[in-house]
Amino acid sequence: MLQRGTASWSLVFTLAEPGDPTDDVTARWPDSRETVTAGTLRLDSAAEDQAALDATVFDPAGVVPGIELSDDPILHFRSQVYGESFTRRTREERP
Image (tube, rainbow, N blue to C red):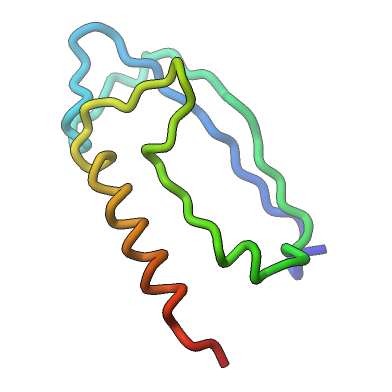
C-alpha cells in the first residue's frame, strides 16, 4: 500500500475539430469540445523491482499503428529531452 493510500489519474482526451490549432500549446480550444476518458490508472503499491523500473524510459513519441502525433513541436521535442533525462539519471551514483 502507498503511504497515503491509492493514487489515481484519469487519461482524458479532448477531441479536436477542423480548424483547431494543434501546433500551439498556448491556444485554448473551446470548452465545448468532446472529451473521451480512455482509462484510469490506479496505484496502490510501489514497484517491487525498482532497479528494473529505473531502467525504463517513457517516450511520448512511441505510438502504436493507427495513432499519430499532432504537429505540436513540444511533443516532438519531448522524445529527445526524455531520452537525455534517462541517460543522465542512469549515470548517477545512488546512495
